[in-house]
Image (spheres, rainbow, N blue to C red):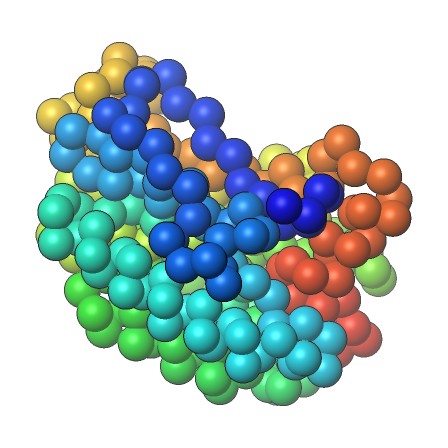
Amino acid sequence: QKKGYSSTALFSKTKPLSVSYGIDIEEHDNEGRVITAEYENFFLVNVYVPNSGQKLVRLDYRRTWNSAFLEFCQSLDKKKPVIVAGDLNVAHNEIDLANPKNNKRNSGFTAEEREDFTTWLDSGFVDSFRSFYPEKTGAYTFWTYMGGARKKNVGWRIDYFVTSERLMGDVAASEIREKVWGSDHCPIMLLLANPRITEGTPKSTEDGSKENIVEEKDNSNEGKSEEDANETKENSSCNETENKE
């Protein structure tokens, strides 16, 4: 409802059984943050989680949203497995950002936001990247434009594929495409090993095998004026403060 603000998009070579928008709560559905596509064997939820804002002015709202979104995912999970893809605007643990000590009261790394994400993962869902790489450091998906942060790899991992626990047996890989430039985020990729999971034509991998790929890329600033892009950065993936360095 607010042009140039938030929004998500989903492109699929396989036609979904159905597509829905939002989480059926009016308070949370006016910023274009959620698209859900239903496929034969899973739901794909594309999400852009609200940022808590400078000086955490939206932290209370963010926590209300977190709770409502978890309930939404749980309701889907009762029907079939869920894949959630998108900018979750939280670095879960200290390993997930370059400077944790300087950011403990900054949006994206508050104790409250991290606690809410832990609650989500304790409710039958998995951070797929950490499932494959539990100890990997320096793995980030967002870098502020300031101070040459990306070249220095001073970043945050705030973009995720979160899946239902029972789907992880069909996940072959969860990767970060950090070498792909285009915005202050980079794409992330989820590879499904079981061809029965999706209905489309599998893509060929480097070794010639056939796999199904779900990929999420941030394009939040594309096609916007400088003013709109600045507003998006203020209200999206973590505040660009001096503490981000």
